Structures are given as structure tokens and as C-alpha cells.
Image (cartoon, rainbow, N blue to C red):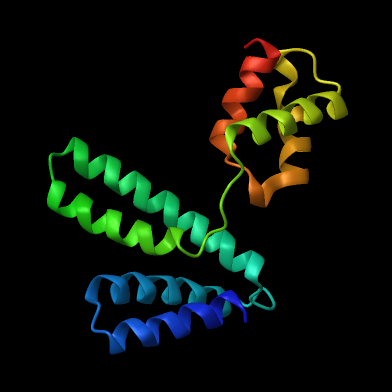
Length: 148
């Protein structure tokens, strides 16, 4: 079952269960997937859906930060609920130990030796593990390994 079909099935279940918070989050996800269809860039694959989910996750995280700074905990809690729904469909990212091992492999493969060459190592790392890695953590570990 494709990711798009899973979201639609979960939406139906949440509507029948009258779970308003989950229904709202799933409708938002489904709307993002429909936008992918309307773009006309070919078939809507699970990979494109995951990219869309990652964008939605980043938007929610940014909103939560802004709402907390503005002392609007009520709005931040709504965003947290939507974030939980989004994260349920995203695969788990690699932990720090696995990411560190991948970073070392990417440094060796790219031949990067200094912080100035971090882009080469990051490119090799993302090419090999884009779907499985937290880019922020990878960047931090690359800086540590290259002595930035």
C-alpha cells in the first residue's frame, strides 16, 4: 500500500472515530499529497510523499519554536499534535552512532581533510543516506570530525 493510500485509510478511520486532532493532521498531509499530484511532475511516489512530509515536519518545528518564543503555548500545542501525526508516517532516522559511522565513511570516500571541504563530504553522505539521516546532526558530526 502506498503512503498516499495509507494516509487516506487512516483519515477514514480517524473520521469514524471522531478524533478531531488526528483528522485535522491527516487532512493537512493529504492536501500536501494532492498538491504533489497537481504539480504535474510525474507520478506521486512514496519518495516524493516522504519529501513532502519532511517539509511539513520542518514547518511545524519552526512554528512551534516561534509560538513558544511568542509565549503562545496554546498554538504550540496544536502544532505539536500535528507534528505527532506527521512523524507517524516518517521512517525513523539513524541514531548518532550510525550517523557518525556514515560520516566517517563519507569523509574517507570524498577525501575531505579540512572544514573547507565539508561540502564534498556532505554531498557524499547525502547521496548515500539522504532518506535515513538527520542533516543537522550530520553537519554537526562532520564539523567535529573535520575540526571546524
